[in-house]
Picture 1 (cartoon, rainbow, N blue to C red):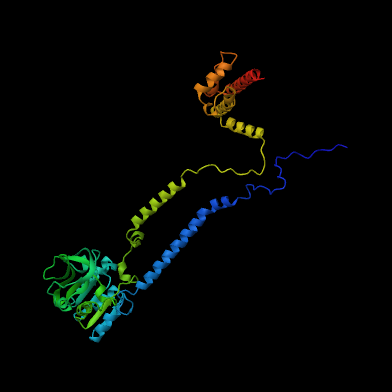
Picture 2 (picture 1 turned 60 degrees about the horizontal axis):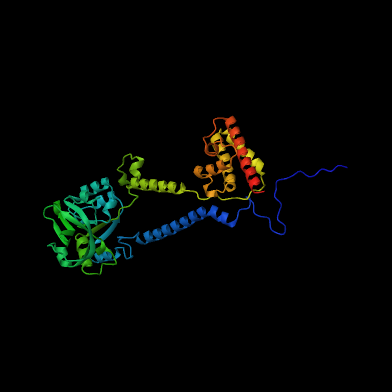
Length: 416
């Protein structure tokens, strides 16, 4: 009876008495950490961003009632509205430009809480309605974005610290109020007959511009005197009551994003609806993308060796590599691989350190001294140019093999 042996497999045997070593299908803890750390870092960044955004939203919720005459918050203005009501002044809150323009009149004070939120069209419409209304217009902390249209003859110069200042002018309201908490923005005045008060250096932080029909425009650089938190300090309450209580009606204009008059009733492109500064934001995104690309293109580091699920015979690996060289016509690379292997094996046989095996001036003379045939050009054989065709490559392989056999035989004869 004939028995056949089982076919030979290339799977390495499991070590006796020990666990099976991990293969490529069972990554180690370090490999898992290496693969997942980028995702964990992204999740951590997302959590940090969410926490910061939530904090910012909470802070914005605390300040959303700033300068609101119905808000008791420290940033609100309920206190000054109640004091004005005690003097017989009625306060009406409006949120659109049309409402503010319609309410302007000789017996009305129009307070514009945040002039910079108004578009150019809104500013022009509001100024047209108030310049000859005969009433008073109070602008709180306008900057160059709005003051040129709403208060011609006044320019915003720079920021000024908010602190207690003396009137320093002949405006009756300021002289009666005395010292007050002002500042915020300093202005330059080119209009005639203007009152410049509460100076920051030589520039006023409160300006009064007389207008036609007995009206006027008041520019206040800081809104602190109107807020609940600072109303009882210095002469803030007196200044606020005199500026806002000059007429029996007070229209408190809080600009809103829901105001359709901001669109000017015309067609707008996509870029018109994008907030200003988008080009800088786009540039920052481009720079961030460039930095990320440079970061990802960095050197990858040492090669990580993985356990193969099967063992590959050395002859099979050599044959496969040779086939790749042949398909790519890489005769030069194949020849250099043969020469390098021969040099590494010959170096210890002729007494050359392995570190000098690739140096022609060190290895070639030592090998030539042991050659029985002095006509063989050892330097060209070990360090010559790449072969021109496949036949030359085969001849080189045979010559290298003959050279190595000759030196090895010489060595064995000398050291039996």
